[in-house]
Length: 284
Image 1 (cartoon, rainbow, N blue to C red):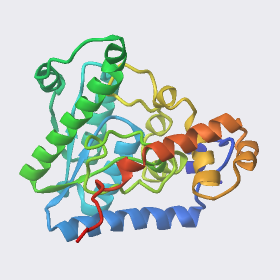
Image 2: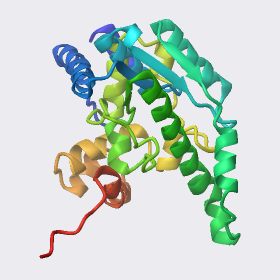
Image 3: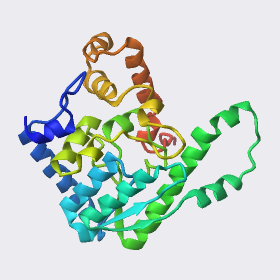
Image 4: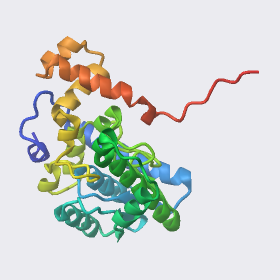
């Protein structure tokens, strides 16, 4: 195996979804061409990438530079108080390594102003949801608004950073981080994103970095999911996308049937995040 496979992961359990060397080269070229085509179609000057210091946004930034050149890519960092300084440092390092311009805009004062504009009733249920649902979703929507403010000013297209696992299970905020012009990584499983990143020369520490959402004070994405990314990738590839029966999927993915059903439930409940708002059929 080429070195980049070792860099991505020595052994992936329970299901290896990585590309062959030829497939990987073709995939990178395809993604770069997709970004170029989106920018050309929109007739804008380039692309904007929201940099979080994580592997998905880092991969998108590298692909955008590969497709458009560093002069046509603009980065934006939108830290909250809960974000670790190391993540923001990684995000700035990515921008500087790629030679792209970038802005840093603190969002806590804006989020606080939005939340304080509405005097919500307090009860046990709303207090329990407040941090995870209201603060987290509002933070994501503030970031989306700033993404488009800067993108409009810079005449840029907003590139999404969501991968297949996140989009399929609804691990995005509607009109928040889900509010983008296109999602180049939307059909790639998490381990494939890591592989693409490694092939583009992303530092090994970033390739292997544990993903965090950065909206509220949670430790990792996988804690919010309730399953690890490799299991999530496997169940999506086998059962949701591949049509393998649930029981066989559980066996092949070394997962419980409950895990498979839980992932399917997440996919079903988040359909509204992947489709335009419903309208009624015409009635005359």
